[in-house]
Length: 166
Image 1: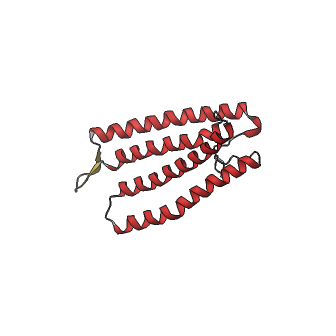
Image 2: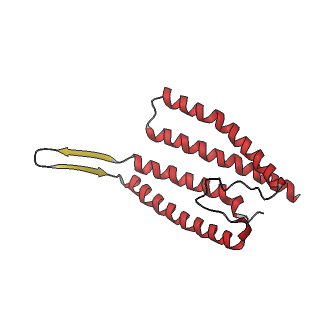
Image 3: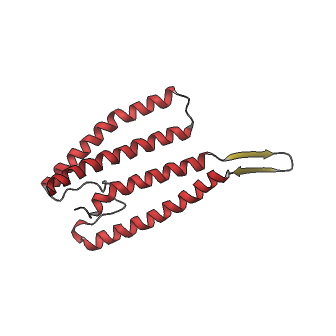
């Protein structure tokens, strides 16, 4: 089960979230100059060197990760025709429900994530309303909540698999 793609899926999502957070830093820091005269209308967007590196570097890293992710997904589907995973499914790929034991493990992990979400999202909303934070910090807060969600889920699933192995 250790090499099961569905078990590794939360790790992939955590990686995508971290890269998206770095991309948000690069995209949120450009300087915009608007020229609006009788003879010229233009908008110039300047990226600082570090921000430009973050935008290009993280976009390239995201694309590379996406290609590897799709390759791993297709390989999993080829090796496990009875447990195919669809990247476009409405149902989360983390749901491992091929038997009663896996259904129980998934339910326990989902309950912990739901408990976390039920208090973290309202707290984040209140925090964003009462503090004059830049938009980037609010985006990072949302990404942090998403990251912690996957960490909670992964640790719970892993804990049950370690118990199963012992």
